Image 1 (cartoon, rainbow, N blue to C red):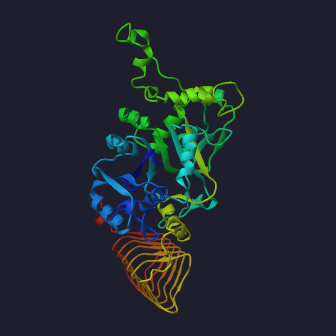
Image 2: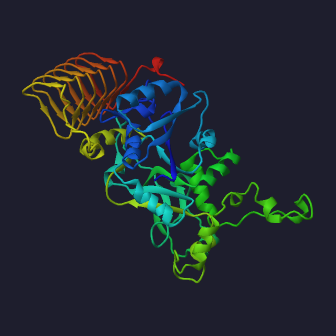
Length: 459
């Protein structure tokens, strides 16, 4: 993986989970008692990377640095700030670090959790000398209707229309279902080269991309593109089957100028320069990437987009409240494989668990936690230094750090943010309690979001 520079996108504000990110940056939301951004960093470390650029909000830079130091991260991280008062997209962030990039890129989102070796994705990228290679996964049936605390309706999963070639790895078409009404149209230039297109609608995009450096050079000239997933990658997919733009001769600066050289200065094909040796090798090779015609390799396309579909294993993006909860539900089963050098135990050695308390193997209990008698914890994550009284029931919930839950309370399908205080005999179901909130004794809430609106942070 030495030919790639890793870039971790951790500058987002968590626009789909604002109730959770009111007091904490999205990158530091706890999943399995580790910061969310730890998971892509861990993936890079396991794949042999030694350095990475991490893009973070300026306001939270110091806080994120401290949190990662406590996680004993080995990766050498170059922290790059993005301004808090501007709404930057992922493409804007890439333009910001353009001068730091000298090779092809590996771009990964801070909310991705995946147990997949990156070298398999790199093999696809190298085999086809791809412009961009994406990682996708077959969406589990359980992901189609995930519920989020504080809402009564089930979250419907967003779908992409993904068009693949017969081999299943050339990306021929890509678009969100929100971009189409009743019909989906295909260009003739695409159908001429690929008359058979497999359309998939149940694939999850991992927001992990391998990308040629020249794409960033092009991006630097195109300020109109703001997002990777929504704009840049679909644009590259469409441009695979286009031709370089040409201008009429009357628009040339002088009669001796080259039509091609002038026309392609701002056109993407002016940036898509291939290695001469690679072109000669393909020309004299009998290998071809397709069948059904006598045309050359890749039909002569200079821009080539590919994907690797993860059919087994785990892939999840914790970019909504619903998927964040699902990540915490699943993480207890994954941590041992993600941290093979650590002796991962469900209950931290410093936690105090009463003799008659029950903690399921599908749960995690953080350091310094105290759990009272006859308390039951199932399918939940308990953060650091929490105090849980006697006869408390916690199921399918995320309890962040320094939370107090008094005797006899029942917590089901909830998120309790840091420093929340739940008094005696409360009954909370499918609700979210914000940071520092106090729930009075015998309080009963279902599908509620309880936050201090006046203290919500806007940056």
